[in-house]
Amino acid sequence: MSIEILPPRHSWGDDFAGLKQALLRAVPSGAAIHHIGSTAVPGLAAKDIIDIQVSVDALDRIDINAFVREGFNHRPSIATDHSPPGLHLTEADLRKLFFKSAGRPANIHIREKGRFNQRYPLLCRDFLRAHPVATAAYALIKQRLAGFFPDNADAYYDIKDPVFDIIMDGAYDWAKLTGWNEPPGD
Image (cartoon, rainbow, N blue to C red; front, side, top):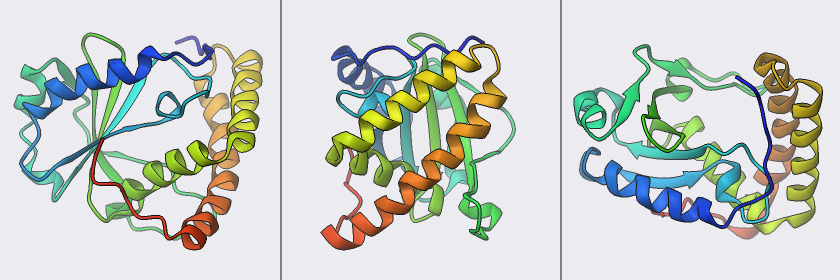
């Protein structure tokens, strides 16, 4: 897989809206659907993959076949997210189900409400939306990493993830200062 970082596209929001319609037919009641990741931040360069988070009460209540019927291919094992250095998180705080769209490239991350990994992408998205300088610096880091490691996703993420943890350290302070709360859904 070659890593290519593209200039921001206005179409990413519309792409999310189209994917959300299919997800609404698969998610359990009470689920929240959010556009997350770089394509959810206006003005941010990104890979042309829409990331979507579905927040649910419990992962074991997910009907995997409902997602498959809507065109989302399941990755059969329970996945876990990156744990920032210095945090001692339980496996439950990092677990998720993961699907890829069979059509328009998209990653679907299903996470449990209230868990560390469920809150993290929402806070980071909102922090970057509110901080254009951090957004521009993060875009530059991603573009340079993709230039250095266009065919080595492991190297790309081995550097990008800790850089993002640095950004998130500021995001936690911003959340406290502003009284940020998790949005209900997009």
